[in-house]
Image 1 (cartoon, rainbow, N blue to C red):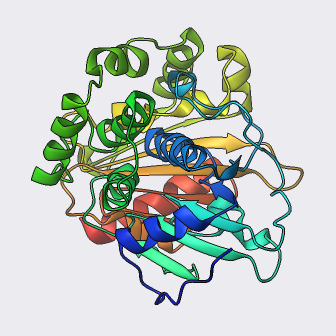
Image 2 (image 1 turned 180 degrees about the vertical axis):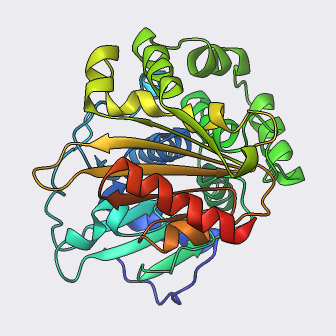
Length: 332
């Protein structure tokens, strides 16, 4: 592989130039992937393969991926579970990974060369090369800039993957991260033949029944605190069993909670299988951005955006909710 004398912080054009020289890459996104994570993984994989690069994709964990994204191309042979070995000469491209822990990137072999591509403002720049754009609407928006800078082909399958990341991370172009650049990107993809109706139906009108039943379980465990400014809901392992659901079916539940009138912060907690103490994955949302939920998540080793973040809490669900309440109270 050709060695590029690139600085630690790189441009889209520099990443594109490096990608054209690769022979084999490992492309990674975070555990419990959302639409931006899987859209990024799909788009990057398809473009790299089109350049003749051998690609291995990896998503940590073993739970089924969200079914609404199963139509994306290039995700058929993903590695799961423990991280695969990284051979010498293989570049690891980390996509939408605010931290190494959420991607298991800390477990790769010593000397693994990482290219860190992300839009989370709390990403510490852990890669040997870093392209971090906090004001980008999604990580797929950064990939779009890379592909355009490199003159790479964006066919209908790549365009679909890029759009899935864009439309889900902007909340269908309703969140505050919806920029003029996001609309220009969508327009360009549309002009290239993107079928937005197909994406809409696949992502938003093909909800598996277990996902709705799990939402029902969460609503049965809903609490309003701080005068209605904080809503919390949770599911345990028994909830998953009753709903016939998997971890991937939790995608989007926290966004349902933040729709409640008067809510400033929404928190959704889901129990994880562990051999020791109880452990909960927590998703946080801030409705107006006045409460920085990323700052709360950082206190527990998590991260994210001002309005959307997550972390892991070891302990009982009651202790977790009380801790969240204390943190939100300090910031309201």
